[in-house]
Amino acid sequence: MPPAVKAGSRPPWVGLAAAVWVQVAAGSAYNFPLYSHSLKSVLGYNQQQLTMLGVANDVGENFGMIPGVVCNRFPPWLVLLIGGACSFLGFGVLWLAVSQTVSGLPYWVLWIALSIATNSSAWLGTGVLVTNMRNFPLSRGTVAGILKGYVGLSAAVYTEIYIGVLRDSSTKLLLFLTLGIPGICLAMMYFVRPCTPSLEDDSSEHGHFSFIQLSSILLGLYICASTVLDDVASPSDAVTYSLFAVMVLLLLAPLAIPLKMTLYPNKRKKIGPIGPSGSSDRLNEENLDQSEPLLAKSSSTTNAVSIQEADDVSDVDMLLAEGEGAVKKKRRPKRGEDFEFREAVIKADFWLLFLVYFLGVGSGVTVLNNLAQIGIAAGVDDTTILLCLFSFCNFVGRLAGGAVSEYFVRSKMFPRSIWMTCTQVIMIITYLLFASGLNGTLYASTALLGFCYGVQFSVMVPTASELFGLKHFGLVYNFMLLGNPLGALLFSAGLAGYLYDVEAAKQNRGFHDALTNSCLGPNCFRITFLVLAGVCSLGTLLSIILTVRIKPVYQMLYAGGSFRQPRSSNH
Image 1: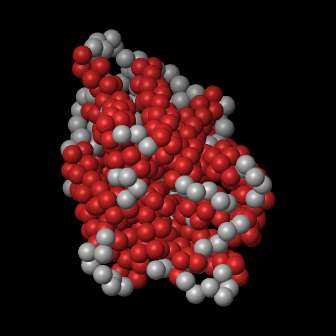
Image 2: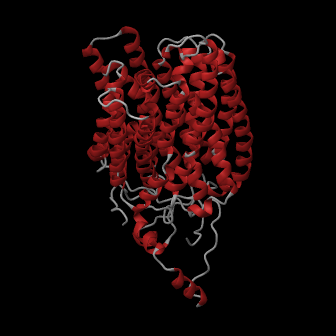
Image 3: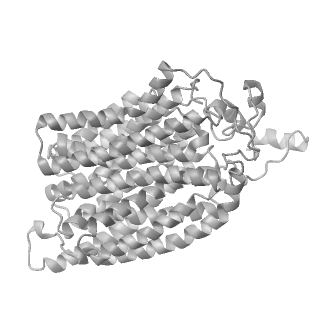
C-alpha cells in the first residue's frame, strides 16, 4: 500500500529535522568500542572472539536488504518502528549479559543479539535516507552528506553521553541504548513522511542546507570540546548536564528552518523547475503529470500510486498489448535511468562501485572495530578520545563528501567517484603511518582515516542513485552496504584479530592469567596495516576505472548545471 503524501513546503524540512535525530540514534553500532572491553573482561573473551562480535556488529548494521524492500512497500513509520523494536530486543539481551542480570548466556546468543541490535541502524537509516532523498530529489548529494554526516557524528554524541552523563559505565550505556533508541523512533516516526518533492531550483533551499551544515559543524566542534573537558577536568554534575543540554539544543537547530518558514512565509513565486535543457518553463499540476518529473519512476511519493498500478499490470496483458501495437516493447534501462534490482546487478558499474566501496570502507571498519586495542597497543590510556576524534572526522568527511561532490558535479560534471579515488590514496598513506608506529602520528592517522572513511559513505549513496535511479534505491543502497560487514569479516576477524592474538601469545608466553591476553607495541597490528594499504591500492585502481566509465553518464545528467531526468525506460 503506497504511503500517504504530505503536501506543502514545510513538511520536508520538518522531516529532515526529525531524520537528524533518527540518524544520530542509528549510529548505535559505533558504540561497540565503548562497551567491547566489558564484553572481554566480564565474559572472558579473547581478542578473536571479540573481533567476531565486531563482525556481528557490522553484519547487523549493514544488512539492509529487507529494510530496502520494506521501505518501497510500506510507510516510513513502520520501518522506524521495526528498527526501534530491534534495538530494544538486541541491546536488552546484551545489557542482561554485561550487567550479569542473566549469567551463562552462550556466545552464539550474544552474537545474534548484537546483530539484531545493530540491525536497527539499517532500518532507521534506510527509512529516513530513502524518504528524504525522494523529498529533495535535486539535492540528493547534499542530503546524503548531511544525513550520513549525522550518523558519523553519532559516535561523538554517544561518547559525550557515555563519559559525561553515564560516567564511563558500559552497563548504563547498554540500558540507555535499549530504551533510548525506541523512544526516539516513537517520537519521530510521525514526522518522517513522504512529501511532495520540490522540483524547482530554489535558491532559498541552498541557504537552508547551508544552515544545517553549519549547525552540524558547530555541534561536532562543541561535542569534541566538551568530551575533552569531561575527560581532562572531570566537571561537576551541574556543568555536565549543562553541556548535555546545549548539545540537545544544537541537535534541534534544523527545526529553525520550518519554524522560520512558518513565521516568515515566502509569498514570492518560485522559479519553475529546470527542464532537460536547463530552461525554467513553469509547470502547473496538469502538465506536471504529463511530463517526466524527476522521480516519476523513482518511487517519488507523489507518483507512488501510479507506480504501484504500473507494477500490477500482468505479463499477459503486456504481451497482448505489444502484439496489438498498443505499447512498445520495454527496453532495458540505460545508466542514469531507473533500474530494477535484477537489472542493476548484471551491470559492470554496479560491481565496480561495490568493490571500491568494499575495499575502502571494509578496511576502515577494521581499524574502527579495533580502535580501542590499537590505542592500548600504542600506549594510550584513554581510548575514548581516539573514538571521539575518529567520529568527528568521519562526520566532517561525510558532510564534505556530499557538499564538495555536489558542487563539482554541478559545475564541472566530475563523477562523484573521483573523490573515492582521492581519499583511498590518502588511506594508503594513513595505513603506512599506522604501520610505522612513529611517535605522535596516532592521532593524526586516526583523524585522516576517519575523514576518508566518511567520504566513502557520502559519495557512494548519491552515486548509486544517479547510476541506477531512485525507484529501487533502498535495495541497491543496502546491497552496497554489505561491503562493510564483508570487510569486517575478512580484514577484522580473519586478519587483524588472528594476528593480534598470535602476537599477544608471544608476548604473554608463560602467563596464564586471562587478563594478560593484551598486546602492546606496533607489532600487534603492523602486518594488518600493511595488508590494508595494499587493499586500498587495489581500491584506488578500481575507482579510477569506474570514474572513467561513468564520466559520460554525469555529462548527460548534469549538462545544464543541474540534475536532468533522462528519458523513461518504460519500467
